[in-house]
Structures are given as C-alpha cells and as structure tokens.
Picture 1 (cartoon, helix red, strand yellow):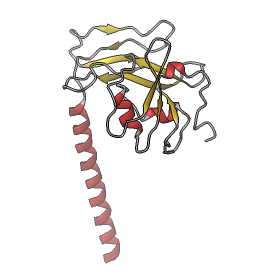
Picture 2: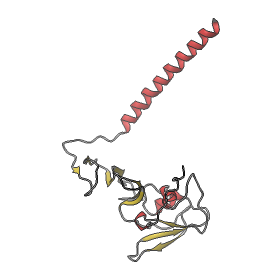
Picture 3: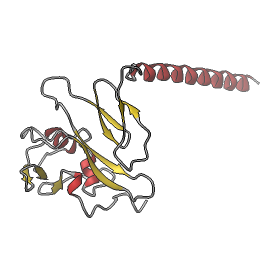
Picture 4: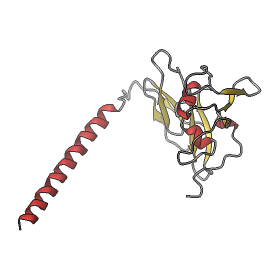
Length: 186
C-alpha cells in the first residue's frame, strides 16, 4: 500500500510539474511574439496565383512570400535585408526550392566561410566552392541567407551530411533546375 501511495504522489508531482512547465513555456512564447497594431500595419497581398491569405506586415520584419517573414537586420554588420531558401509546395505543385527575399550579397570571406565564389552572368553570387572547415550556417551569413543551413537541403545533402572541401554549392535556389528532394526516400 505504501508503494502505491508513493507512486500516486510521484505521478501527481510529475503532472503538476508538467503543467507548471507548460504554463511557463506558454507565457514565455507569448511574450516573445511580435505585437503589431492592426490599425497601423499595412496589409501585404501574396504574389499572383498564391493561395495564402493576406497577412499583416510587422514592423521590423521582411515579408518574403509563402507565409514567411524574417527579422530585418538592425545592428551594424548585419544584413539590412536577407535572402531566404524556401523549399515546399502550394496546392498541387511538387515540392521545389525558391529563392525569396533580397539578392545574394557576398560580404567577404570570414572564418568558416573562406571558399571561392562563382558568379552568374549578371555578376551575382551563384556558386560557392567549399574549403576545409567551412560551415553551412556561416556560408549563409556571408551571403545574407537568413537560413543558411538550408544550403544543405538545396544541394542534396540530408541528415546532417557533411560538406567536403571541393564541393561546389549552388547558393541561389532560383538557379536550381534539377532539384531532387534529399528526403524523398523516407
């Protein structure tokens, strides 16, 4: 009988702790959300043919399309506007990558992003050749790609596959015409 009472007391404590943790997480999450004045925020209408409903633009955020908004850079050294790699689909279209947001800008080599850049016909960054020690997230930062880790998915790497020195990555999703979903076999 003592054992059953201990188990019941332990379960009650776990449930109570879980509810407290949930309440704290909920309060924290709601305090982190940007608050917009609905009367002052302009409406943004998606691109023609898009099925998404209009959303309110939030001060300090860059609306990119496909329901995606990212913070605008406000500190020195940050990108004023960023590019974003979107991989998804709307309606009946197949999953595909798109480049959203600003054009890519090469802010120069830096630790963990020392590779060389290939340019397109207009002189914009198009490809990146990996050097030893390069990291996807930092490569993304170098080119003002908000979600630089998506360079892996864009270039066919899956499940944390490591980029290797000499690999050539496509930087701009708009240049990928033969994209293959690295997770299609799952």
